[in-house]
Image 1 (cartoon, rainbow, N blue to C red):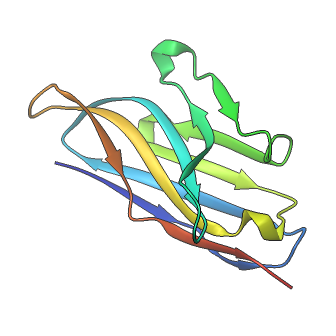
Image 2: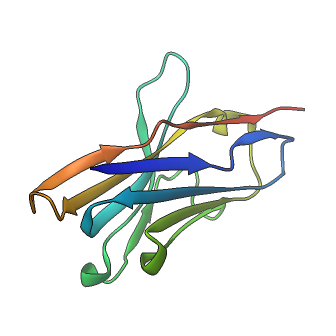
Length: 124
């Protein structure tokens, strides 16, 4: 019913930048909160940045470790979320996952969806 597809990951040197995208498709009635999570090997998945739906004002929040470096945004007309990552550090290396709270046109039921993840590797 709903698919989330991330893109934009890759290998980058410390201090470099990447821009991740997440496109939601399917029978979408509305998308409420969205967020970027990441999971490094042997670690628990953690919230990197979140953004509320337009009805909640599109408020954002960030993990302390990325504040000032990452920027989350969304284009509601395109059902797309972005994560601009600047000044990347080796500790940012992880698989980054897109998450969205979606109400589908099929059931009008709120459900949490995940993308497949995109690898971000920061290394010299």
